[in-house]
Length: 338
Ligand SMILES: O=C(O)C(=O)CO
Image 1 (cartoon, rainbow, N blue to C red):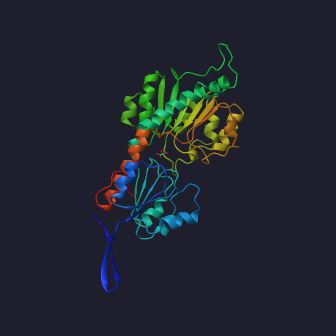
Image 2 (tube, rainbow, N blue to C red):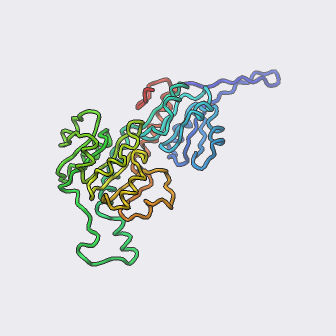
Image 3 (cartoon, rainbow, N blue to C red):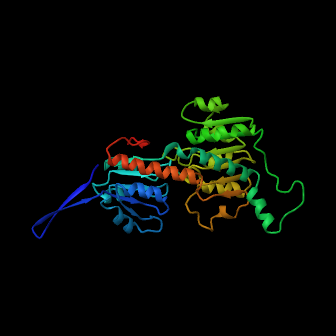
């Protein structure tokens, strides 16, 4: 166990004070049991970065051993540098780590951990919900009902079935596979996916590896579940949006920057695609005057794909335990090799 020893001369007596390393929890809603776990080993400061100024954030990180953060906590070089040499670990309670400056982490020798596969099932559940909500116009129908717009007409509020459709998954990692497994029970006609190479698990599920251009052209439903990085930024670009079927439904549960949102809005306005379901968008939170807010064939969720109590609690516990692992100089699971 690492404890810092501070020697203070007081009235000719040597006083020994033991202090715990400092940990910053950069968000406010963390389960009590996780805070208790962290308090056993750290001096914990909880400071929500949301609505804080850069100056306040830089002040708070100084002298910390670790930072416990999440997908929307921007970790840039200035922050890492400002924390000083005490900073040994940043652990994000998220599967994505695109919000962290990896080059700076390596430069300053700070270790990075993330929550990998814990949230795949919860994210897959939300993906299926979003897909059906968009294709079957559930929010539009609900709104009509509540605003006295209920029409007793047989073809009113009809959407499209998933059954017999071609579904394309962009990025077939753990989340993509969880989505594919769930889709398998919907009697789809073909599952397509993109990946760096063939995935045996996807093949077992009947998936066919295709290029991104083939996928957008052939799919009735397109699900974006790829990690955001320099190669995947705007993977759904203007040209690819133009290739989509006129009834295609696009769902994004990855990151907003994976899609050219301006081109998407234009395509929706001109009815060139069927509909869009987004759990992630640019920016987040999306301003109320964004055109997407007013479109009836768009379903928007506030980045809640992994937000089940069980999943988020497990993510928080694993995050805490792995920050403690760094303190104990033992291996950290789901550490990114920088
Ligand atoms: O885990 C992630 O990366 C998210 O986006 C939200 O939980």
